[in-house]
Length: 270
Image (cartoon, rainbow, N blue to C red; front, side):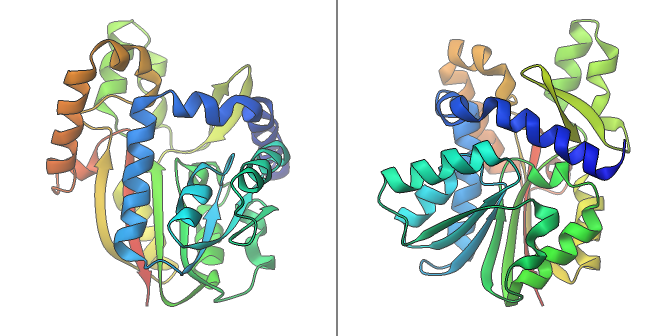
């Protein structure tokens, strides 16, 4: 399949789940905790009032919360249905003056103003769906002003919970799917999202090649399980809380930050 076909199939997959996406996310405590940590990282490095480009904004969950904190956002997504949901969410919260929603894939952001943003933010792996990561990062770096910050939550290559969970079920193929070097088809509600998994080291090197300097890195979902184990988390809320606190204490250590369901990275354009 060529790049256009891969992107179109991924787009259709997210179109198919857009209507209930925010509601299902809000009911998943693991996912909400990861989302909150990504937003907190942006708040740590970027002051309110800054112009933010939110890549892969989905139904606008992060865009609305960040706008409420005083940020100004351009929120973009490749899925027309997600863009529709995001616009409705922004309008319902009376934030249309702070949030502009546009249907743009990451590969299309070259139409946006060069150097027009104080920060670029990408949560829950939109960059894992980029067909050409190097090209995507170059476009991102060009949109940042000098000393602007890029913050991304990226799906990692080595998730111990996932390997153990699927090995116990005898599903070797699913246990090792993240070790593939290329784009792999990941099911989503009967459709396919084409996904490439990254080790933090290789992703960081690609960012450096695009002119971005690393500031900070940590794992997400190393000790706490990944969001698709929501049912387990709902049965053991106290244990999950303890595991999330361990993640927060140890997730930035050199060995720990190489593992986990996601990693969270902050870089600066120098």
